[in-house]
Image 1 (tube, one colour):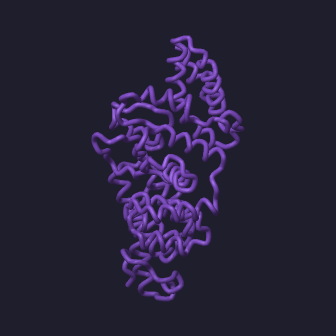
Image 2 (cartoon, one colour; image 1 turned 120 degrees about the horizontal axis):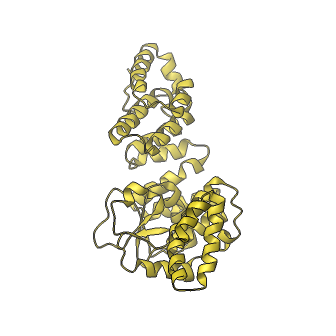
Length: 322
């Protein structure tokens, strides 16, 4: 009988082992019934041997903020257990196992990397793992590997460069998702930018009296835990002391905005990324506008350009013109 908690043998071995296969499938059907019903589940249900569909299902369930915490925990566990029956031994299953371990299972993440033909699908998670474990050597090697295979676009480089520039000296930047942690780590490790900053995976708390900043992608729910936090550009400082002075200095002296100025806004991802500039830009604009500072004109133009491309021009003008 197949043990669900362990790695499976190959799919072909499961099919030929009739008695074990029947028992496993019956049990997986019970687990499968407890998964949330959505398009990702339907894709898996259509072809349960589709490893990509299982991984997509797991990732999107994990990211879905509409699912209650306890229900999500149960759904992810059931997805992990059920997927083992059909795709155990695949890189996708090993990556699911890594994620299910709270991103601490080194055996699973390295197995996923070894099995995957396209290493760029796994390397971001290995970088995340090395940040969690504070493994400096592993972080250098994994960022080098990904940067060689898939260099950052100019847009991503500039955005995350400015993110690093939004933090004070010897700061700690917290993030959760690979969309922030990975490019920040690559810019630090491979381009030697702001090596004074420590990147950390947000695990639910911030140490007191630490020079801490949060990436904006960390989410509104987490931000609300820190009512004293304030924008410093593309980050939020947990302690608002001197935050506005930092914001002004970062914008005027440290930010590189050449790519932003010439952006074509051809992708939805780019538009969503550039929207993150708006809170800091609006704060500065109001200050300059009130004080009749000519820099308000340039800022308003930048704000308007982003707002128009994002389809939120009316809402933004209500904020800056009041």
